Length: 198
Image (cartoon, rainbow, N blue to C red; front, top):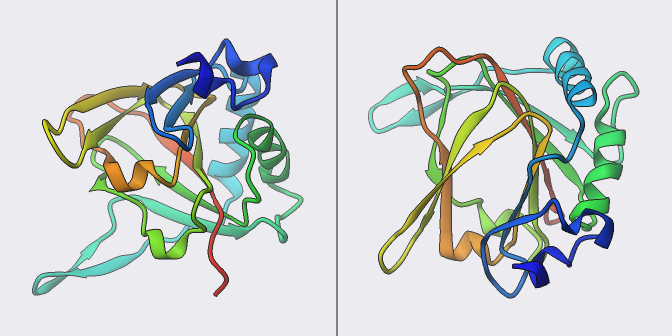
């Protein structure tokens, strides 16, 4: 566990938890990535000012709402009014990569979710992680092996936490945010990726 967490700067290694082990760093979690005041300030700005969109997509024989709001930004064109440049700098300290795109999901309440999936690998540069910052209300993420016993991990993503998933982990595991009937405040996930050209 320590060897994989040591891929990050030694200053932060003690805060790192390895959830899935692989040769590229696996799935690592830093619950204390940002202090509470910073995390709340980031959430407030993004919630109020990000360019949120509501999408629909075809499913079987009908059109359905995507059960969350979405926003997307290129890392070389980040707006000064949002804290994304500061977040990107801090993310690179923990999970270094030449991130090129930031995608955000706003889960408005417990009815918003994302089904179990792995990222579309043809859109990602091999060998680089997918790294997300969680803001707002805590939310449970499931991480499930795709083969063998298909063991499932449940991680309650805390506000101000960071989760980094290796490219290789997308071949071995899937992840998702299930719906919940419990009272649930809004949550934003800010996801940093290295996208392929075009």
